[in-house]
Image (cartoon, rainbow, N blue to C red):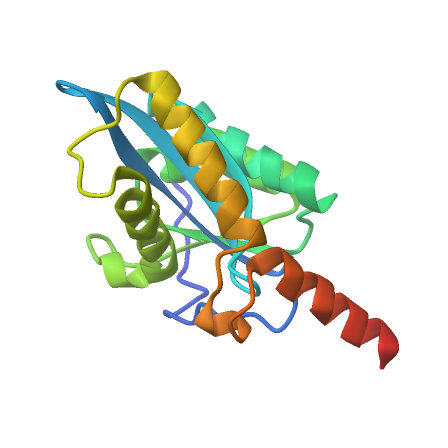
Length: 184
């Protein structure tokens, strides 16, 4: 896409409500000698909840559009939300910009070559690899990798505690926040 995308985050990965600010990235998952699966993520900045993800044996733009569409299905809508990413070819493509426009999502991108501008997504990727690979150099095949990622993401959203959430997992934190909002 020839349209420049501003940095609407300025390294502020906080949000005052769910479904307003998201980050995403692609990470490599080693499954064999020189073979990889690729994981695209969409993470809510409010609760750190992984609301959308896609895993495939390619890095085509459909990998990231599938993750964003999954997030929209999970949330019911992403209208008026901001999605922040790096300048990867998938995120700068016309196809991705079109899906963002279709879903009512505003794009945001950090500076080129600065991983700190997408630190929340980078931190998520590092935790996933550290906690699923546990020191191994690769997964024992694609099926093992897919199962490990599925198990880990389920645990991450439902049981893994986050300091940003007052030591609560993302889904319980969101549920408590909604309950408190309705009670007020």
